Image 1 (cartoon, rainbow, N blue to C red):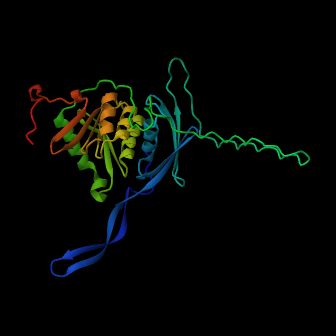
Image 2: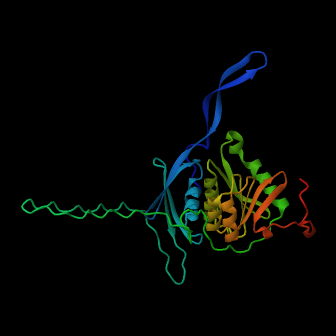
Image 3: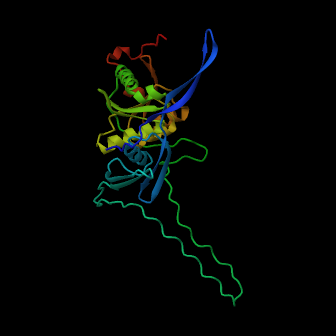
Length: 312
């Protein structure tokens, strides 16, 4: 169901390689190289237009829906009733039916209409003295919703609602997941210029995506899971990029309780995750990892091994 454009996520371009030869010194060679493809996308939902300036061109339907979910515009309980892609314009229209809550009938969204232009004031009567007239009202600009309980200006943190408990994850299983994810990342092997994200349970990877941007890879995973009606509150998100506060915001918006990466987290990400009840795991590499928040979700198979010291 995820849209795949006419262009692949990579392309061949002419290149010139310079290298040193032991006998001839520096040399040059005309060749070609595989580089990652870059596209842009505009998502239209109700009367909101969201621009994604840089993304990989495949699975953009998943990206559009996931971006709306993590931006707070679509709830995970809602249903997408239509996805329409305009290939010539790189635009995706999204329509939803909201879930029924407290007896309220579902509301069907329509394709956003162009706002009516403001009426211009009548020209002044030349026989009368000129008067100051009010400027016509401009159409209201639509903005993305603010994060819940936003903190004061100058702070990157906000307090999110605590997530529900989820099944425990074993450190060995988490390491296996990352070994599997890195093996699957064919686009990274070809270009070295993308990130991967995977939705996982205790048995391994459920689904995964790659993208030129790490935030886009996360949105594709969340959008894909949404369209396939896969629950998220008992899953782990595995990513290859660093965990910053925006990544934590996304997992909280999608109700994912655990996020892990082979890279480290930022300080704001750790503090925000601690308040939101999210487990943050970093440096998952070489069969080791570091848990930075809510470590009770990561347990050894043998309880007596929990407090072993790291020999390294």
